[in-house]
Image (cartoon, rainbow, N blue to C red):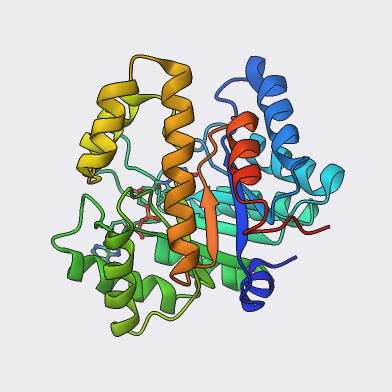
Length: 290
Ligand code: FAD
């Protein structure tokens, strides 16, 4: 199913994310985690693309497994900045062979030391265009409610986001955020800028306090005081942190749904127990489709 058809139904949706293995020896454990999450029958599952693209075939194979063995719609991520047109075409061909219809088109991060390298792709918008030209895919892009670290300003980022949507994005998925007011303000600004495609809210249930402080410091993600207090209090107790992180994410999701944000994507990070708990917490709010 194309995600554009799912979103056009304007019903609450719950989806999960998995990331592929970095090396072949962990392939089986990642596949097994992805299968456990798929057996929860979410509305769709995204499979990320390894930074640099070295393990690109795992994305296609895990996405294909989710679709063919669990009948769960996959969203395959694809990055371009460290790749070229020939490689992109071969990935598209492999996705098409596996009957995967949805792609999240990303630029990817520029590898350190390669900032001045000549490249065929500079921004995700060109990848969006190429995928649309290639064939019948539903294409999404990434967006950043707090701005991308390379943006001169949030307004400047939104101008480039509009170009990316005009290149053919059918929907956008957000970077994680921990304060819903940041998303509501961003939604107001992008709608004003003429971006009308569905927005999928990316929610990260924090299960490792130290790790999240590091990631947020790098990406500039705002941590509300209430969230910091939870991490300070429970960060050294992994099972308490997991329970508190799931509760915080659940509350965030309920507030989003109450305010009309229908598409919820959980960065479940290959953790079936976290995905299952969030789904259970929302069982009456987003009933499982049969
Ligand atoms: P772009 O949309 O190209 O934007 C990158 C920057 O360039 C922004 O600052 C933008 O404003 C600016 N820009 C765009 N166009 C122009 C222009 N014409 N002139 C000047 N500036 C411009 N990474 C992975 O490696 N694998 C993944 O699977 C993955 N999944 C992700 C999923 C989501 C939901 C998100 C939010 C991020 C994901 N990332 C992933 C990380 C992503 O690759 C990085 O954040 C990357 O730095 C930017 O990618 P983008 O597609 O947003 O880039």
